[in-house]
Image (tube, one colour):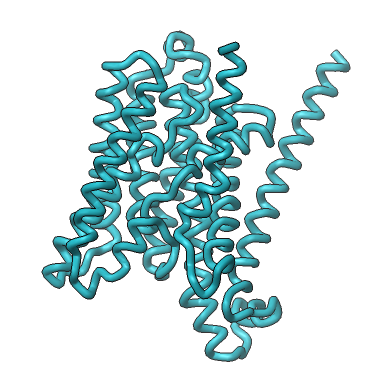
Length: 346
């Protein structure tokens, strides 16, 4: 009995330390993203800006018009991306399932690119709502193909390959569209198609914050049925969970999160796969009630860190965010695959 209490106490301490580490990481990298750049902003100047004190107008514009909305976008969308990856991994019972790997991000990117070229080519402004809706349609289209393939193939490896092929097809269509998009108003389309948090505005941040916050709360409220689902569909049904309804909600919510990310930042690779595993190892548990908020914080830390490197590593040249996330995320995916192969004794 005493050993059990000590074990529970050790677990609780580990959870607290893990969340503290993630929270400190978010704050630290948020501050770094605000202060570090081609124009350095001191902590004192940043404090003055936030408290409404008098500060140089150039510093104020850089902070409020460029860096702060961009940093908040990386925080919000990074958390959403990790959460979408966690939902897909739970849905498919596969550790390397994610929006980018399964081609869901590529499908969303394709439809958004088509809508942007069509609308802006006719001098029609594309609203945030329209972009999210277009991305959601693209994400659902790709998800539909993935679900169709999941019924045709038995091996998860074949499902992943199918998702990758879907992603390649959608990316090819997108590149074709971008190549022939000559309108001056869509000069940033090529950069967006590679993944970037640049050019964020406050109205974008507001819309994504609302969409991601509401979706994340709904996902968190699903913690209990998700916990039962992880133990198998038969077990979940015996516990009174409507498995079919739960699976529909998982598809819709993961697609909505993916759509919000792609609509504003383009496709971002490997975050949705790598972060849930890093967080799981940090917590030492896969309980959804802990994993859901931890994944969100972990995704925020990961994307803030990668965006900082993308902006500053070869300044003034800026790397696409996917280039940096792939450098850190791809080795983690390879490690996951090698670990699973070893566990199976293959």
